[in-house]
Length: 78
Image 1 (cartoon, rainbow, N blue to C red):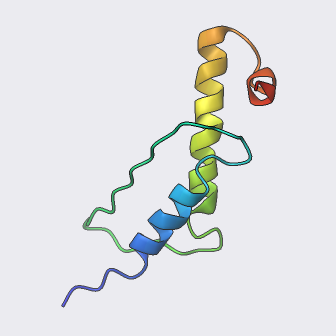
Image 2 (image 1 turned 45 degrees about the vertical axis):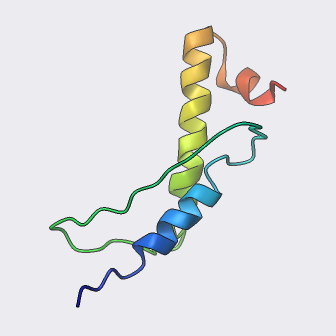
């Protein structure tokens, strides 16, 4: 029997938080839990939330880079 510990729950939490505090009206997110040959490092404090929020911050940063404006301005766009 394989013990997955908590990766599916961590992935759910990361997906739940992936829009961070931004109102993104149209987005689709898919997550994958993969088996590796390393020990599990999951479910520590943030339980996937910070990793999900980091995704939104990276999107904002990428959009700002393409538009040539600051990340703060992109975050305030409606």
